[in-house]
Image (cartoon, rainbow, N blue to C red; front, side, top):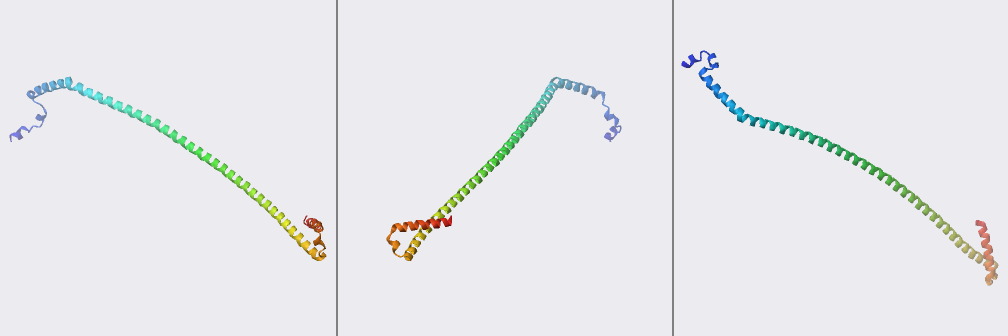
Length: 177
């Protein structure tokens, strides 16, 4: 009940009593003075150091960002240059391949023409040999036939045989010409 009587007036709690207020105020002022004298400079120094550290970090971050942008630009330039060089190499390779293809085609045409020319020459040689062989065979057969027809008169005279063969070859040659 005593507590209830004491707290019956709630406003008295909020108003300090003079006997408690003055010593509390003196102690507060002494602590404030000591804090201002000893703790406040170190707290302010710590805040200034923290502020300086933050500013340095921000400057360093800005420099790092600027450096990263510069490095990115250089990398982009290197990549663009590499792409240009690759494109040039591809174009040069295509040009070289086209030149090589043209050279191979020209060489193949030349070889084909050489083969055709050689084939024609061989065919002409074979034809001449065939004509020569046929002429020789025809002459022998003709002499044999003439010998049978005329008799043994030509067989005895080799000079007459030669003249007759020459005459006959001239006639056969004029028929094919």
